[in-house]
Image (cartoon, rainbow, N blue to C red; front, side, top):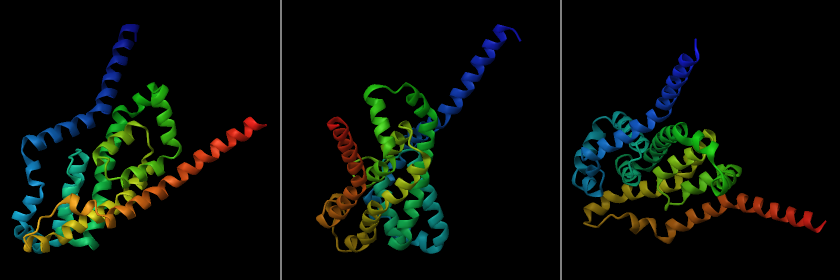
Length: 255
């Protein structure tokens, strides 16, 4: 094989490698675009739940296991394509299946969907950015890597960070799949319980003619304080590690 053939073969291999890396992200982006283009996002609202609750209840009653399986699949796919409506779907799950069944099903579905987009983003750009990271970006990546499990847990606990954005960012920063799965699975349980509780209580609120809002429950002290406490506990190892490092540096300088 001459040099021209080798160059052509190398270029072909690079194109295939690029297609393999970027293909999943391209499919996800296309699926999300189609989701909005078809207007499917309009069905993921509290108004939809209120207007169709009898039909939804009948669908679940007709075949609970099938309904649960379909819900888990739809939830996982919605998360995988980064549809920013996980909180609404969690309310649907709490309303349709209650807390005992709904919360575990939602946590499993969300973790599966999040893992799909995480792996896709890590495969597409994670290695590329890791190889070229420098300066502040490199320090941020290194700092995140030192305590990535705690950081993942905190990011999942704090409700101000978009769920879909964390999935992509974690892949780009090179978080290990193990820590991503553990941090996601356990970190989303408190928030899932809160949102599912809203759905679980929505029926009585609808019957009483009351409005069901996310902010009305999410920002109550009884909801926020336990989550803040969990965040503080998750950050404690990080703070202690930084403190010990600073103490060690001071000790070395004193010598």
